[in-house]
Every structure is written in C-alpha cells, then in structure tokens.
Image 1 (cartoon, rainbow, N blue to C red):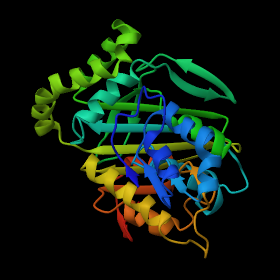
Image 2 (image 1 turned 90 degrees about the horizontal axis):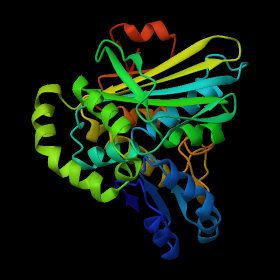
Image 3 (image 1 turned 60 degrees about the vertical axis):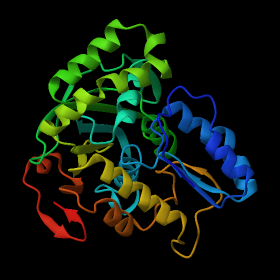
Image 4 (image 1 turned 120 degrees about the horizontal axis):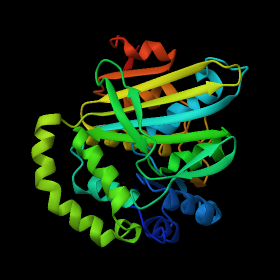
Length: 323
C-alpha cells in the first residue's frame, strides 16, 4: 500500500495505515509531511503492525524521506566523514520553486503548516518558534544559488532527534518568487491560528490561488533542492546537497526507492514488521542502490562534503552521483 493522498496535517488518525494492518497487508508506506501524523503512526501502531506482520515506513517522499536517509548516512556508519566523532547539530534546508508542479496539495499543506509553531531541538530540549520565522539565506549550489528559508514544523526534526540521537535539530523551507515567501510570512503573522489550521480554509485558498500559482510556475519552474548540514563534536562540519528539476518526479523516485526496499531483502534480511521512520537503523542498508534510484534525473547530488564545496559547479562522477 502506498498512501500519497495529502494533506496529512490536522488529522486525528491514520486510517490507511490502520486499514493496512486490519486487512493483513504485507507492506505500507506513505509520503506524510506532518509531524503529528508521523509520530502517531509509530507511537500508536508500531506494536499492532508488528503483530500483523506489516512492514511500514512513514514519510517517504523527497523531504521528508530522502533527506532523512541522507542525514542518517552522514551521522553514522560509512557515510560519516568523522566516524569517531558524533553528530551534535543537524539542519535541514529545503527549497521548492513555486508549487514544484505538485499541485494544490503542497499549497494547502503550506497554509496548514503556518498554523503550527515550528519545533526545534536545542541541546536536547524542544523549542518552539514562530512559523515562517528565523529567516536564513542558504547556499544550494550553482544550480539553484542562494535562497531564503524559514522555520517550519516538519516531522524530520522529531524523527531525527529520536532515531539519530542528535541533540540540536532544525528544519527550514523557502520558495520562489520571493513574494510568495513574503505572503507566507504575512499570513503566519496576521491570520488567526485557528483559521490557518482549518483544512476547509486551506483547501479553499489553495483552489482559489492555484491558477495564479500555475502561471507563476511557468516562469520560475518546479525545481526542488535540499541541503543537509551536520556539525560534529570535533567542531568540523559536513554538508550534502540534492537538486532536481521536477519536484513531483523527485518525490516519486524517493517513494519508489522505499517501496523497492520494502519488497526486497538487504543483507539477506527483510525489513522487520512494525512502523519505521526513514532514518531508523536497518530501513536503508544498501545506500548505493537507494541513492541511485532517488537521484535518477537529478541535476546535482553530493554527499558528506566540506560545506564550501557545495558552492562549486556540480561534477558527475557516475552511478547517479555528483560532486
């Protein structure tokens, strides 16, 4: 079962996951980008899924999803450039041009997220900041350049804190043109939170502005980019970058890579029954295969590089990998 019907925000249950458990399905994944839904899936249904023999992975889009696996690869095992030094800070930064070609769902999701404080972890303690606050200018490499990003309440902040044990975790998002960022910030500051958390309002607003967004998309494109930055206890840092010209295609590639993992043994073992986050230990073992599938058609992909290297032109080194 692949559940890709959003938005997932402001829901009180996990009906598709529950139905998969109840009907004896063997595998389940979703592309959830809502923190409450993702945490609820594992907290409330992990034991039931295990008893039913269901292997489920939640939040398996491009972000969250691929981004979580990139972070896990950088924080532990062969992907860490400093295996003798633990990760102490993790930051996710995301950019999507316009709607990314995804349609009304991403617009409704964005509105709903504006009604939630953005959770972060600082030295192990949760800190909530305003939605679409804390402006950062992030370098996404030569393909995308520098872009504004703002704090949002995203599930990978919670899942990476739990699964990877990193004490300081945050996530940021930005779009283009810049006027969309201004509009998002004004909505977060001026509109009542209850209104922003209304699925009816979010869906209606998304439908209303979609024609304008489509027109703007024709000018700005539908590129998506993400950067994962890790600081280690030895004071050194590492960065990873992914850029794709089509957000929807990138999300589809990522979901397909997770589905491939669910249907295939790795190191002679299937993924165990239960509900898992993308960065949980054992979810992705064959990183070469996983990254190769996720990066099909991408414009840039670099893992565990010195941060300054991401500012250089991408160099393809084969197997879907770029430096």
